[in-house]
Length: 422
Image (cartoon, rainbow, N blue to C red):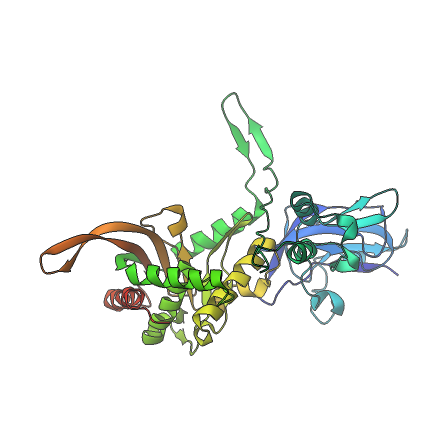
């Protein structure tokens, strides 16, 4: 009996996906577990496997098409079976008629998995995991895959590495996952001194989101600087405690800034809101969005109930979020801008002294954190000295917040940074 292959829903916030690459062609024989196609949301990439054996009787979309979730993408069955009843555009599909295992299925690991064949055994491994294993010197034959159908994924390589690599103090050494170069852009046209390249699907979706944000809000940015001496002392203290083994988390400057922002949001709950035109949604908890730069583009996962965490707990959770975003294992629901109540974007490590971050609607504001620069400051009457100052750039929606409110909130962030206690 012919069976449709639907576009899965990867998280409740995802309404459509972009078809990436077909790995099977119409007429090909497929077995359960074979990769049929890859697809992308606005922030992540996945792959869909065959749920049964048969022949790929039809495909209804081409690579690059944007497809609503739960739409029939292809049909698998026996040769000669009819496909017309499954063709999109007929009776609308719903979650009730879609195969239950596809709707509720957890997101598969990204990275367009492939299969390796060796003379002695068949090894199923994703390209990301294969690349990581090669760089870290891990024998893939020794790994046990935890991915779909026993496929080796990046997490398996990281786990194997963590078990074998230790520092002289016998504490596990954290291995940063190597960056994998994104797929080269398709060249559409070429001249003597130029190339016209296709824009990746992810970039198209990010561009649309940014344009929508600027079109549908009245964004204004205020800039201010905070004395970073207290924060730098705290960072030095935490670094020593981490080295000595007193604490298990290496608290960073960004962690301390986020901690200060949370305290400021508690004092200015009108900033911890969503703007919906004729109404505003006020949150009782702080769900902090953290901008993370990845090879696939900027991702902003949300850390739920961030106001409940200590500084070490906050640091640990932020690190886990950023690692998951960079490795492609992030829960797609956490990337929905509506999941966060406020976002922090830190470009300080890049030496940026001032910038204008763009709001993640429906949030009403976003903080840009800039680099620390020594600037003259009066430290007592008539006495000036160069003091490390951290640049802060607050973009807010003037429809939701008045300039005075935004200025007072930014001043409170400055105050929290300069007088931080943890």
